[in-house]
Length: 418
Image (cartoon, rainbow, N blue to C red):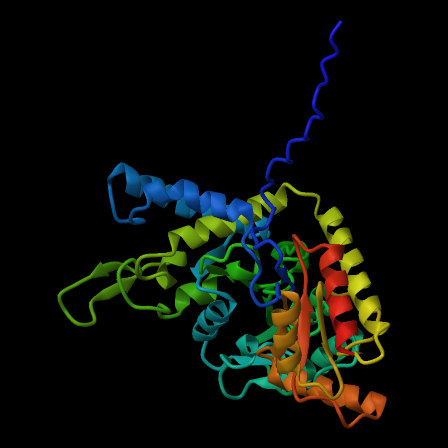
């Protein structure tokens, strides 16, 4: 009898999942807070639609009809994902910066905007003169108290209740620390103010529901949310948006254009602010990621990320030559972002060395939040009694696709640099 040896069976690779992220083998990407990698769901949605690509809202052919349907379904999917209410508009923009600039253009005359000095430039620079910029608080509870005091002062002695908008981040792009959005919204409501949330850093890491939070406006970037195809969203109450002049004047934003120069009737709803050929592929990609995230166990995703974040922060704390930056206490809730410095080392040089010698990508600089980053660097120097901290910082950020091996590789590289 001849014995036939059966070769060992090689297990088949696991089928790709919608929330798998694309990447380059060997490269460790720890710069998610700047631009997250592309999710397979986004890439697949774009690939599927590309053969059908045609104009949106402007054609009777089969391709145009299909693209129009895909675009409006994307709007609905994104609105549902973020808890849009009846009367809310979902306006496609380029990114969070574009969305907040759009909102700034739609403020009623005389609106006062209240922000904190810890905001990203996108939530500092668009607002009109006369806006109130509150100091960076020492705690989430301090933020709530500061806002309450500021709004009390604004309303003092007036019975007209002029428009007030509170504009706040959901999570800091410098430290990852989460801001008490729901509590700030309660304060805003008590003072008859509206509230807008920059969710660029919060939305990729945690569920965001405008109805549950009771906020008026939400700004989001697709490139932070694993859909890097140039689309963002401003979602929120339609009355200010419908009353304002169009963000861009052009085709698609009008319901009538006559022969006379000023014979124009502008559209209402999202179309009013979406003149020109829209970014169909960006909208569809962002909707695909929203749909994929909605089908996942968000609590499990959050727990996995928090375990990696703890591993990263504890590893950095164990390195005597690394100083972490923070606004609140060390145990404040946060998303997967950590900023830090190496005393005596230029942050740009460290980032370049990590890339050249270890194939690790991190961010260096002041992260488009110059007032906050400079303040945190000064506070870190004062806490440690140091005079050798560099003028800029390093930032490592994680998300879907990040692993313990990625975190450990960064920690080992930083230990070697020390």
